[in-house]
Image (cartoon, rainbow, N blue to C red; front, side, top):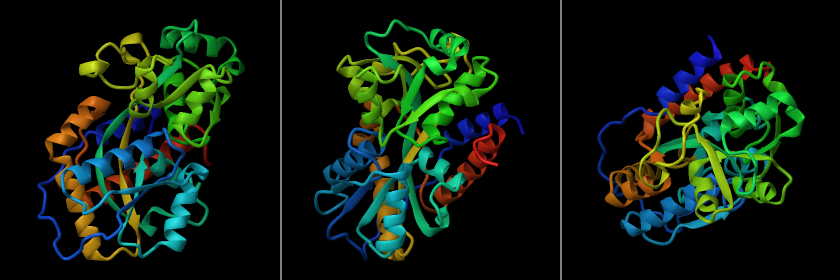
Length: 330
């Protein structure tokens, strides 16, 4: 199977529609709802916890404010181990996850841990990847950045909020390969604990480019600190993102959709699991969440319960194959 075929498969999977909603479970209510964001503040996982927590409360789907805890380290591995080893039966806890989580699991990057040790709840949308530079950079197009990388791969350090071999890294490698860089292993990628930290280093001049997702880049775009060279979507997004060119229209046919969702402790009760699955499903169907998706450039991805579990399994399988093809794992 080719890299192109695998990439297409991942893109198609990221745009699946879902089944009808079930009634909200009535025999469980969290007393102290909590969401772990497995990264420092400012990244995509932090956005997922905070925005979903606020919206769940706004819609009356949780009884009190969602406590958000940032637990960074190991590309999400510290949080995963914390949940599996110390909070396995916590019914009040959910954890932000994404394609980056599936990537780390696919590459056996969480030592001793597998996706089957937790319960997968639901998705809340798909977040397209971006490649950006600082506002004062002389580079204004994605081909220009790739040309510089072709001439001297070590002259361009690209930072992201996932570990080496993680989803942010893979997105750059897909774009680089589509741009004609034959040995993508020469691409200089530097990992940070979260997208916000990577952008900070970009603005400090330690990096020449940033790879992340639109939701985590949006605040820095709004403040004028960075300029997005390309969004890795099949076509231009709407609304306030309509001016951002796609990589495809610049001659680099790279697409990268990062799903966003949640997992829960593996020992969570069925009643609690049903509660959280249905609460997130009801949130997804709300007008408030539709507005959040539009404002933050999220694409539709509406999967819950067993369907989401199967989707994550497929994502892990596909990323395993992709990682082997480009030499990240054996």
